[in-house]
Length: 140
Image 1 (cartoon, rainbow, N blue to C red):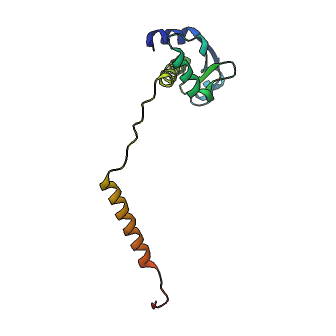
Image 2: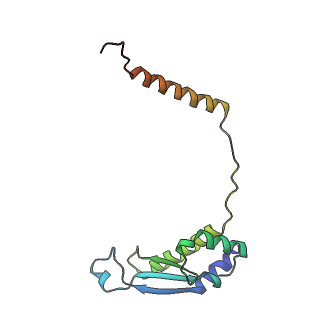
Image 3: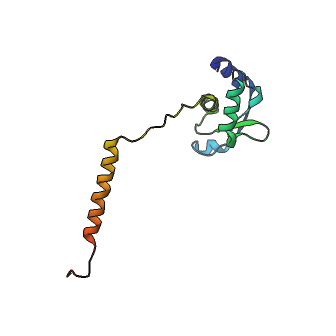
């Protein structure tokens, strides 16, 4: 993955729209378009191999529209510029994390001592519960 090329292509391919947002800002919220919506057409991104693009589409499938666009909205800050920067950084983080190869899981087994500890605790728990049991020959 070419990070610099990816960064440049995200900034070049992004379609940005602004709208009014809720949240902090008081009466300013009703007047100023501070919410930023970023739309990225995944086919226009450079710096990703075919395998990385496939992993990206698989892992972000719920966030990708039918038009093959990744939509990111940012409205946390009071200024449009801050929200724009947040949207771009969020897009870069999402794309780079999704394109990264997951670590290979090496299956492991519990040690003998761990198995014995587990069985001993089960034994103690069973004895505790059987001590609470009322048998017909006992008096209350």
